[in-house]
Amino acid sequence: MRKLKHGRRRPVRKTILCIITLSFVFAAAQNFYIKGAVSGEIKVEIKEVESFVYCSLRHKGPFSEMEDVINDLISTMKSLNIHPQGPMIGIYHTIPGPNDPENMEIEWEVGFPIGEQSFTQAPEVRLQRKIWEATLVASAIHTGPYEETGEAITDIFQWMEANGYDKAGPVLEIYLDAGTPDPSSTTKKTEIWIPCKK
Image 1 (cartoon, helix red, strand yellow):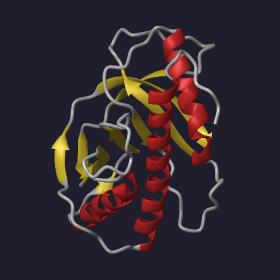
Image 2 (tube, rainbow, N blue to C red):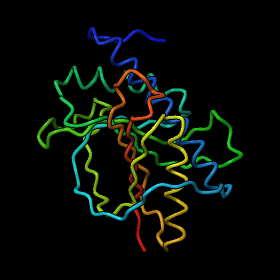
Image 3 (spheres, one colour):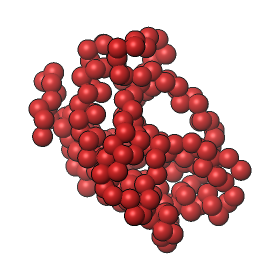
């Protein structure tokens, strides 16, 4: 594992391990959904959410490259003196199919909410300033170990299909306590948003 900079080795490393775990769970959940897995129980609701500004690094490649992308994200934000205004987020633009190889080039990004005036996009900086604009989402909160988060994603897709909603944007995951030490904790919370339309 590559050493992390700026003296934050242990907390960031734990965050990275948690996010990598979540990413693989997300991919597995998409495969289960496509195959038509049986739904579990989770409270899904349609809600209006506010748009927000965030910065992120977008990447095309397998989830195994996520650790390097997160390292790059954190070091670039520190070099630009950009401070997170909320928990880390993951946005997934490609839904892997059940027969896709693990190393397929899928598109995803990792980032943090930031203040509206945090920085101006510079052409030589890969870090992007963006706005989350999807306001109508199917939402659920998964409480429990990260390795079970995939069940929540599967359930949201199945709930949407049963209630006449179509996916209208990339899946967003909010890692509400990704920095806590134990990824197998039964109290960890992950909020999932799937933009939708009737």
